[in-house]
Image 1 (tube, rainbow over the protein chains, first blue to last red):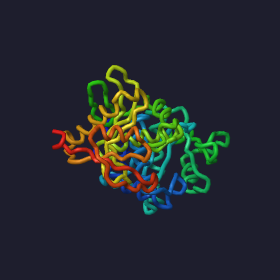
Image 2: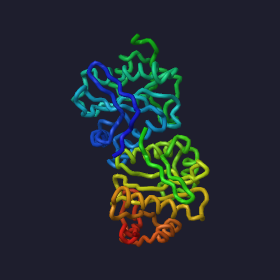
Image 3: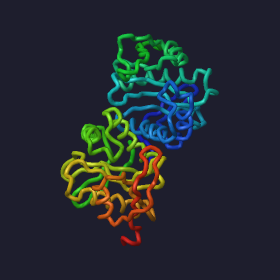
Image 4: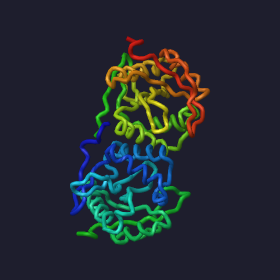
Length: 176
Length: 171
C-alpha cells in the first residue's frame, strides 16, 4: 500500500480528521453498498464502491484537498468522511459529510467535523464561498446544514443539471 | 502527495497521473477508441476515473502510469499494473492514444511487467483484453503472452485472458 503524505490533519475537541488511508476502504465500501448511502450517491455495488474509494483518494492528488476520514482521538476507527469535495464539472466547491454507522449519529460528530472543515476552507484553502449539496429527502443533512448556519440558495446550480438537489450556502463568520 | 515511482525506457517515461493529464485522457475516453477499455465516458466520469487510477496505487501499492515520450511531458497513454476488485488477478494493461504503431505499448508494457517481476516480486501476470480489441491482442502476443480461458466479468462480459511468460522464462 502507498499512503497519501503531506496532507493536513485537523483536530477538534473530540475528533481527528486525517486523509483517507487504504485501511478505511472496508468501512467505506460497506456504507456505500448499504441503503444508508441512498442520499449520497448509493447504494452501489462493491466494485463501484471500491472504485469510488479510489476516487476519494485520488481527489487529494488532483485537487490538493479532499475528504478526511473522521476518527476519535486515540482510536483510528473510521467513523465517516467529512471534508472538501470538488470533482470536475461540479459548479462549486463543497463541504460534505457522511457518517458510516447510525450508532455515530446524534452526538454532534458530523457537526463538529464539518465545522472544522468549513473553518479550514475559509482560513487555509482560502475559498471565497462554500456550499453543501444535499439530496432532496435527506432531512438529517438539511438539519445539519442549518445548524452550521448555511442557508438555502435557490439560484445556485445543482451538481448535475438533470438531477436537482438543495444547495446550502455557508456564511463566513458564523462561528467567529 | 503519493509516492509513485517513475520508470524510464529507451523512448518513454512512465510517471504518476496528474490533473494536467485530464484533457488528453478525457479526449481519449470521449472517442470511439476507448470502447474496449470501458469507454466512452463523459468528462466528469473521466476525471473520477483518473482519480481512481491514483487511488488504485494507494489501495494496491501498484498501479498504472501515464506514459509520455522522454523529452515531452504530454500524456500519450496509460500503462501499468491493474487489479480492481472484480479482476480475477492482477494484469498488465495498456492504452496508447497518441503515436500508435510505434511499439510504445509493447515498450511501456514490458517496463511495467519488469516492475511487477523485479520490484514487486510477482511470479505471474496476465493481460485482460476485451473481445475484438485486436490491437491489444497484438501487443500481448508481441510480449509473449498466451491466451487462456476467458474470464466472465460481471459488467463487461467475456474477456480474453493472456498470460505472460514468468520471470524465469524472461531471464
